Image (cartoon, rainbow, N blue to C red):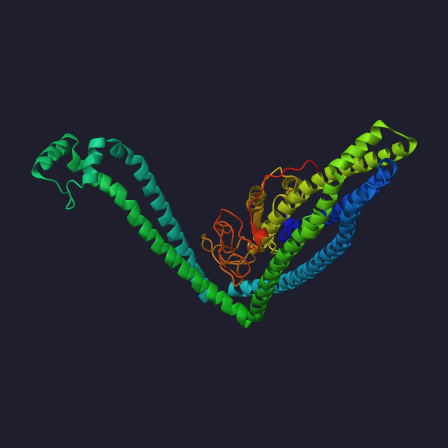
Length: 513
């Protein structure tokens, strides 16, 4: 079962929404957990005050109570401000997410318009293709292009045979160290430089290996492929020029039938999509920064909140409080037992909260890494124009098992992207029986009934006028605007700020999304 480009991008977008939604939920849980921990410490401080009133001399109680109360008061006031900051950060993320959703909807709408214009141009192209089959001048031009294409292909085949001969038949020469010594020295040519003594001994070596007879043969083996390659390139240029003339003829025919406004509108829509994509990147980076700010708040890295909670924790770890608790455990009364049990319960809850918080923090790091990697993949996907309606993928598990493997850390982002690239193809429609044009990649349409077409493939490098259809070359690149990207290696998505690193981590997760 094949997967169409727009459907594939929609599946990636859905996975992205799931990741962001879980990120937001975890950040909120972490923020609430930090607040719960602070409140547990407040209740623990109150319990110690109660214990002090029971166990300590009244003259000692005010000093201890004052220390706890001041730390507790600062923590309580800071907690109020912290909660407001968390709410503000959550609103900022929600607003940015709404902006991004709006841009995605704009993009989808533009892509729908693009599909409609492409279909209209496809129909017009088919009409003109049928009409041109009865045009003698066009048919003559097409025959010329076909003949030049065949000549170019024959030249390439001869060149490849000569290169094979050079490798196979030249091996005995290259394996002979004496012959290669004379060859590298330029013996027997105007480039040979040596004194009389060396010349004398080189002459003896040359007679020994029959160099004067072997050198022309080896020179021919090396020279012929070069000359044939030059000839083949000239023939290829001639064939491409003939195809360009054929393309111009067809383009003019479609223009006269109303195709130019459609092509111009397609270009405008593509520019709009490129602009929307740039806007999405900006929003994603701003959202990434907002998510990091919320995460800092959630993990208690706000300086004021951190200072207040640290002071309260330090107050609860005072030596006199430890002594007080130890004394209460030794001389237990019913009142002591109640307070001690509540302190123990508060500390047990604190440990549980700390354990869950560590797990949630680790999960949040994994999610952030996956989100950035998926943003990179989405960017490359759109830049390669894989979401074009004519783009398809042979493996539907790209949005099933393989997507789950990637999200769980089973495969890397680069490996997952390679699966997409290997699976991608451009759908070819229309009759191929009449398509007898040149066999080299061209700018032809996948819908042409014969020869080249006025409608370009997304990367303007191949199409239906060619029986030897190729995919976009190189690594990443070839976006809506036709700009070139990196030719392999890493992802090319631009990023801003400190969160812009694309160091793809090796996080592994035990569960699914």
